[in-house]
Image (cartoon, rainbow over all chains, first blue to last red; front, top):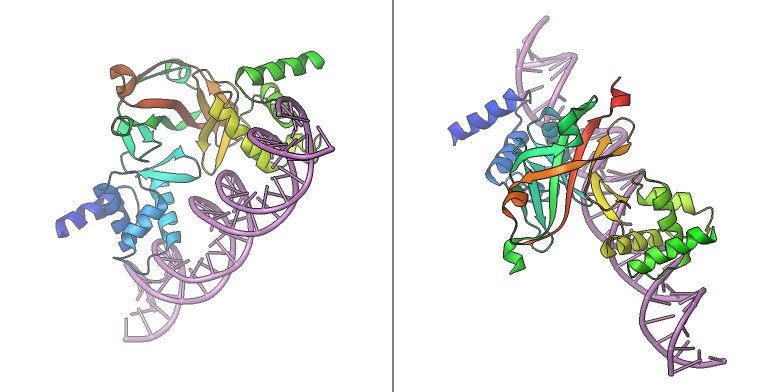
Length: 138
Length: 138
DNA sequence: TAATAGTATTATAATTATTCTAAACTGAAA
DNA sequence: TTTCAGTTTAGAATAATTATAATACTATTA
């Protein structure tokens, strides 16, 4: 427990984020639950443990994580942002039936931009698939 | 004009869409303005010409176009859907500064899914880049 | 310990995209 | 003309997000 918390704290510090208890708990939730949760999911998972937690804090914290590069925002769904603590390059598959979002490995990105380089600045690249997953398709 | 309208009508019919005047006008706007507009953009561009046009109609029409495969929904921005009349496989680059969305050619998609096939069903795939475009980066 | 400055958190209001609903309209067929 | 399914409309309702302003916390210094 203490060990684990130390890890979380040093992870936050590594990204220049001041380790408040809310930030530690939110980070822990993201690390332990690789389900690309939305704000509501994070909030409702933690509010029992921290009854005074505010949704605004969840918004602020996730925006901060994203700005510092500790988490990514996923725009795979209309009208809500999801969050991913895994920040290496990978894609996602969203099942329209069970709503689950799975990771998809990307081996090589073969586009105009990746081939010829790009004179502007690229912050993020996202590959999203949408459909019905194997389980639901049966 | 008449010729052009006939083209639009037959395009709609080709996709099994009943050609109401609203649908014709919206299709024409999408064909003539390849800027990946959002609902607001489409609505405000057409409301002068059709003063009774309702935003609900724009929503309904674009949902219908997307369902019938005549247009694609783009989830490149948080909190709003954009529409693309170009339906062949291609990606997008969104400039965070000037807000412009450019098309990006995709030559080959090299992912777990494209390599090994997928046992489920894939409706859509989307490649999005976000950053600062060449012009704004100067 | 007390004061203070800076940061983080909170509750609430405001905003905005989208969906819902019920009524009105349209055009084709009976 | 009447009917009927499909379409459009206006406005209300919903839900995610953002903005704001007040409060609480934390670390440092006097």
